[in-house]
Image (cartoon, rainbow, N blue to C red):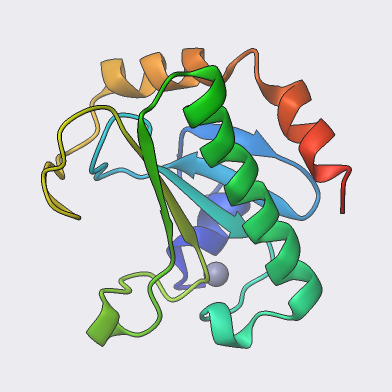
Length: 144
Ligand SMILES: [Zn+2]
């Protein structure tokens, strides 16, 4: 199995998991643009947004929206980007549909500006930020 995200789902590769249920998983981007940069995926493998069935697409986008709202409303981020890339020409690097949720904490530095290697300390901080938010995520998902 070559797909990195499928291997993360199966725990064959390590990741920092923020949220998980039977259909979706949320984990930290290993090269975050900003502190808290999340990747939201369906657990089933689909190459891009265009291959993903509507029901799964809707739930995955809802989840991304909930996470973005929690950054804005609960954690005080003044902005958030919620985006997917389709095709290598658009910057897609892993061909398993995923949505980036990128909180913006201050001045705009360009879309991918500030990308850096995730440190253990930064990862632990972000997991701490999310440790008390699971109920809000579950509540939001119950709307679909
Ligand atoms: Zn996959």
